[in-house]
Image (cartoon, rainbow, N blue to C red; front, side, top):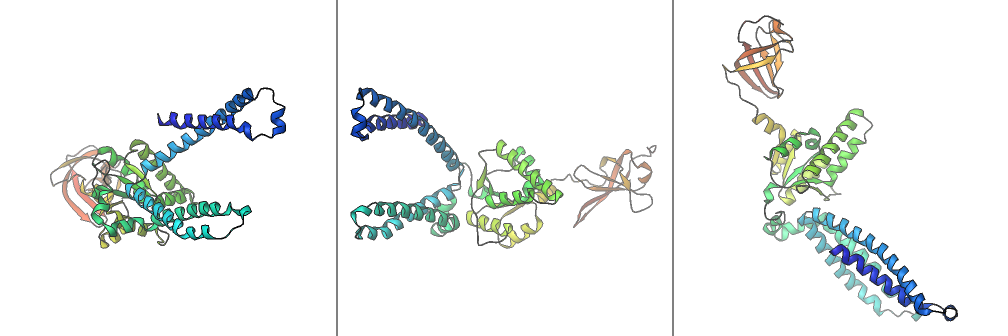
Amino acid sequence: MLDAIIIISFILAGAGIGFNSIEDLPSQVLSQVSNETALRFVAAGFGALLGFAIGLSVQQAYRRLEKQVRAMPADILLSRAIGLVIGLLVANLLLAPTFLLPIPPEFSFIKPLIALVGSVLFAFTGISLADIHGRALLRLINPSSFETLLVSEGTLKPAATKLLDTSCIIDGRIEELLATGFLEGQILVPQFVLQELQNIADASNDQKRTRGRRGLDILNRIRDAYPDRIVINSADYEDVATVDAKLIRLAQEINGTLLTTDYNLSKVASVQTVPVLNINDLAQSVRPTYLPGDSIDLKILREGKEPTQGVGYLEDGTMVVVEDGRSYLGGEIQVIVTSALQTSAGRMIFARPKTLMVPS
């Protein structure tokens, strides 16, 4: 309905302007017109066509703007609105004296021109400053009210808001984690993380370029699959050099939780009391626990360090060292767990063949 109103309004405005524009024609031209009424209707028709074209463009631009506003986090939307209002107020206060300046009549257009340019300039300045300092200002004014801005339709809690870092996107497990439904809340992807992904995808190194493109593909897939949850956040901090530092600062400002696979980032964020969800820690915690006496079907892939040992791997990558397993190299056997060892490098399981089998 709104689309139709916009287009019809421009059509009527164009027709009206065309109909009345005949009066602005030179008298010499009008004197040669035999039917002025018909000329008015022709001009109105051309005006209506032009109005339709302009109205269609305005309608499409409005829909694009509406989509961007809907996808914009509430805190950024509010801070930009406040910055716009403050910028316009400052413009009016500073530009008011210019209307008292004595200007010759032939240059009277300068005053409204100064007012227009100044208002636009101060408005954009206010929005830019709001992008840099707006969220911190809102948090200082009223932290509890600021946190409620992150609630979407009354269903998401501020603490549930997650910030994705580059390593987590490239890792790819976030896609499966979202599909399980265990990860709740809004997922924010800061613009500077997206820029880092693009820089990696454009790198001269083939391996880095492949990882960057993989990350962009994964991000596009999860945005298509969860358009209401994945939001590209336009926040940036020009005074902060590294992406990790920017992530921590943004998480502090919005009371968000970092979602990462970067061990160093996890430690630095923890020191600064920023909640962190490390997917590697999650994967480690949900690995199946094998107790002595449990049986596992295992394929022996390579020889162990000891003369009789064979080595295989579970689906999650856990190494299983099988005593007397070297003779089954390349074959699949059933083994009995004898012990498990947890090291800083990961977990290792020791086992032995369940029964004597014919080597493959």
